[in-house]
Amino acid sequence: MELPDVGLVALEDPESGETMVVDTADRRVRGAFRERQERARAERDRMLRSVDVDTIGVRTDLPYTKALLRFFRQPQAARLLGEPQHRLIYLCEKGAVVPDFKDAEGRGSSRRFSARNLLEFAIALRLRELEIGVAFVGAVVHVLRMFEHRVGKELRDFRLPDSLRVPGAPDLRVVIADGGRLYFALAAAGSPARLFGGVDLQEVAASNLSARVLDRDLSDKATPPKRSGSKGFGGHEGSRFLRLELDDFDL
Image (cartoon, rainbow, N blue to C red):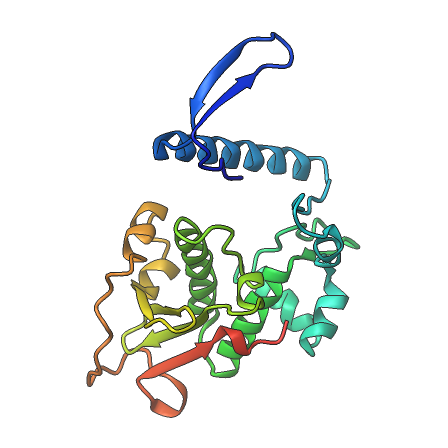
């Protein structure tokens, strides 16, 4: 939730009647408000999940029907992806994809997924087709979420996959370079691509990188990957680069 930049605003506490003036033109004020709202939302979601209540985010300025339709149970997700359920179950059990709404909680329970989860499944399944290990696949999905958060600091309401569907949406490509380094190339319409990353997937897979380090490594000042003679991670059929264009996934 963002506080709009509209200058000085007088706010009144409906319970106490106390009023105060807030300078919404101050970036620090807007940043503090955004962080407080994000913490409150995260805490609310954790509390609701603890009592087995699902949450779906809706906005007052957009139709809520689309948001309500982005709630997929496991059989439906499998049908949409054109894959047998056991492949989705395997990726969940290995921790490569974590359900946004609900994970399995014993015999007879059902996982529930978001549209972002479906994109993560599509990417994970494509990588598995190329015989990439599930630990690396999980690392790619994890860093993709961190990248979404990183870009969301600059581009308001940037969300995957929704932000790749709208008219004039940016082009987003995932590049895994030789040696197992992950990059993201993001290009808005008519603008040159910005390169983010250079994250070492082996370190991510081994859980050796903190969220703060990942956020730093996902800056847009990445050094372009270079070809080398390394026998480390390679792409399909011995290539040194693997590239996925996220806007090609029809979800």
